[in-house]
Amino acid sequence: MKQILNYLFEHKVLSREYAKQIMLDLGMGKFNDHELSALMTVFLMRSIALSELQGFRDALLELAVPINFEERKVMDIVGTGGDGKNTFNISTLSCFIVAGAGQPVAKHGSYGSSSVSGASNLMDSLGYKFKNDESVLRNEIDQTNMCFLHAPIFHPALKAVAPIRKNLGIRTFFNMLGPIVNPSSPTFQLVGVYNLEIARMYNYFFQGEARKYAIIHSLDGYDEISLTADVKSFSPAGEKIYSPEQLAGLRVDGADIYGGESVQEASSIFMKILQGEGTPSQNAVVISNAAMALSLNDDFGDYQAARDAANESLESGKAYMTLKQLLALQA
Image (cartoon, rainbow, N blue to C red; front, top):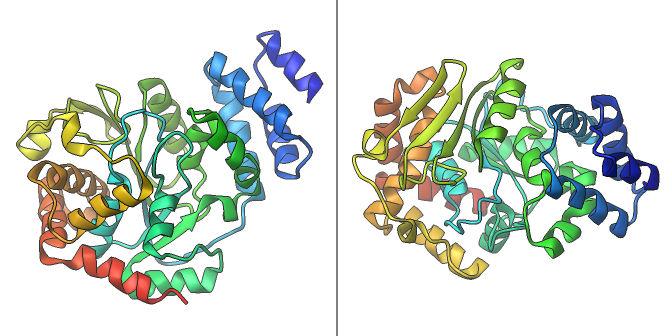
């Protein structure tokens, strides 16, 4: 690691192959916590290069526990986190709405490192048991259209750095890796990012893959459709900017999508919205994100048709029933 750090301290950029080898070594436990903290700090001082992100991703996918959902065309809705906005769990809620509308979801997530409650904190608090047994996860999707992939049990490298990331309490380059290493290789993916530089990197990644995707960034800094400002999207169809009024007919205030100060508070907000007791602003935000995701699948039509399906999933209770059925399967 000393050689690697000296190389980086000289403002040099890692090649894709060199970055991959570093992450492979990390996954095999060759570095101690102090060395890993120093490595992460380097990328807090400068932006990560495309070759470095590619190499780190290559290694994580090579080391990952494989999961294959075969003919099930799954979707993921995920954000980088690290936007510092402390919203409620918008992506996870959107996943349940999407699943309730009939679209299979393999949600990839982890514990929050720079936020109060990450997707894994939430799912754990609700009683979901993390697992990487392919047959059990397939059954969850078959029975409920939903399963959750807890990143650390699929990615040994992510497990190794999780305590360090939590102690640092700020976003690191691992925030950028999470959304692009879902081990199930979803057919459809909606990814939220905290800045446009990362959005362009992701767009480059996904252009060479056989998946339908959209990358979104609210121009006031949110890594999701927040309806607090215009949102920019990147997809195979090109770049677009949408106003909150176009997406939902209203604009909301940041305070309307506050996520609480504890996992328990975040869980309470989550359940109220899922049970149909959300505020108009909360509902509009999750439905907008779910609709953008559903519109990636031509079976749901354009954005407005997808929005109707998302709204029906939440209002009818199908989204909530998806959670109840999923939790009933936990042994």
